Length: 305
Ligand SMILES: Cc1cc2nc3c(=O)[nH]c(=O)nc-3n(C[C@H](O)[C@H](O)[C@H](O)COP(=O)(O)OP(=O)(O)OC[C@H]3O[C@@H](n4cnc5c(N)ncnc54)[C@H](O)[C@@H]3O)c2cc1C
Image (cartoon, rainbow, N blue to C red):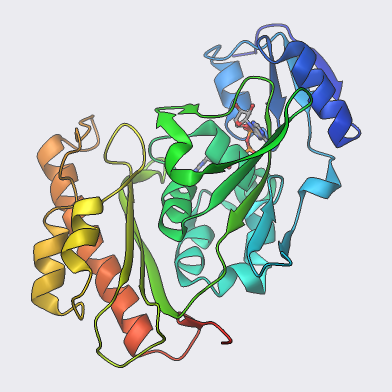
């Protein structure tokens, strides 16, 4: 099917893009890699009057270390760029996840900014960024720049905290402190590859790695299960202060859907999806634990100080 008629403008600069969004935010839409938006337009589930192409804004593409030690990832950084970045791949959960997102064509075009602005409830990147405690930077011509904590970014299925005139410009990850291990596990739906249940985990010891000592920083994020990606706070609370021993992990993982309305569809009913979320949580926690306590690298990240 062909999309409904639309006008097209290519932004040559960031200011250009912000001006176009300021003028047309309600009836126009930004296109980055086009991997989610164009299929929606072809199905006529999206009918923007104006497409604002930001694909050539090179300043929004790439991975760099910020002066305060955080990691900055430009909104137009593609999955393929992430796979080329040592800074990104040293985050073990990113190395687990990114090579398996979509296929090589989509990874060459799809961007990290597009992925989270699209806010698919089964998207992988939202769970990864929730577990990492990322921050989203948004910019508008009228109000300038603001930061949004990732926990406040996803408002519902395909809905985010971005205002219609705002462009997502960068994603920032906190600098590592202490020792940490991380992992991502998902059960993929066979036809589309999207997660039926995906669990991203970061476990840490803020005072530095002490073999088999207790963890004091646990972040667990889930995708594909609720109507939006979420932090599994009951699991986190159950694991803080433990050594991530097997019984603690098993008991905590059983709480992965606590307080969540688990989705049901033709691929997985509520019971199966809940059970698989528990399995993915156990596997991810076990793998993150091994990386924290047993592997010197690449899964374990230690701060310099
Ligand atoms: C065949 C296929 C398989 C896939 N498999 C997976 C998978 O396994 N896991 C997974 O997580 N995803 C998967 N995806 C989805 C894919 O990750 C996204 O399509 C892609 O990353 C979106 O990025 P994009 O740059 O193409 O966004 P676009 O399609 O260009 O835009 C998507 C949405 O975000 C908005 N947007 C884009 N950039 C910005 C910005 N900087 N500021 C504000 N708004 C913006 C657009 O207006 C639009 O609403 C798959 C997609 C396809 C086509």
